[in-house]
Image (cartoon, rainbow, N blue to C red; front, side, top):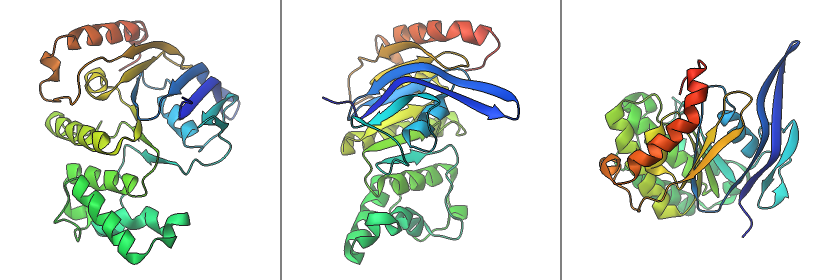
Length: 263
């Protein structure tokens, strides 16, 4: 089967005045359809750049990004991008924030009844039924993340790109949202590319983990996570094999961390 996303000998350099910042160097990888892929690595190694390239928000320096076997040359409207900040519109209630993608492009042609049904379905999927009329300022941090997820899923993209979506949350809330994310992913069969600094989080959710080197980002290791699903995010650290995966991933990162990078 053709991978849904491919990175072929991908390199990217940013320019700031006369300064050259080498973000990525010769990255080659594939993302299979329906896969949950995690990307970890030191700060500044190009993880977010890979997501931006996947979304068609920037062009490669050299190499290419393919979507369903075709070179990506424009904004990729088949993916949804969940950033670290929820970016909810403060003047819109939850259901209107979730509705935003349905007001754009081909989705604007949906009937009112279809739009209403889809909005209600995804609000229920993320556990926000009863909060449809609340403004973002009236929601907790976790509820705002749920609303952001509903908005990202409502137009039913093929791929969900997530850039450290739970990084700013406390440990307990992070576990709750990891569990919700896995429940939603297993219920939709979507492809998910998830950037994180947290090795335990990567092992908990992913089918595969790509480890990036320090800048310029290269693929240092790829680890297949062969732990049974569905996964209990609260107890998975005690499952046989979890510690071995953690040690191998940490070994792949250790050299860069000891050079002054941070995970």
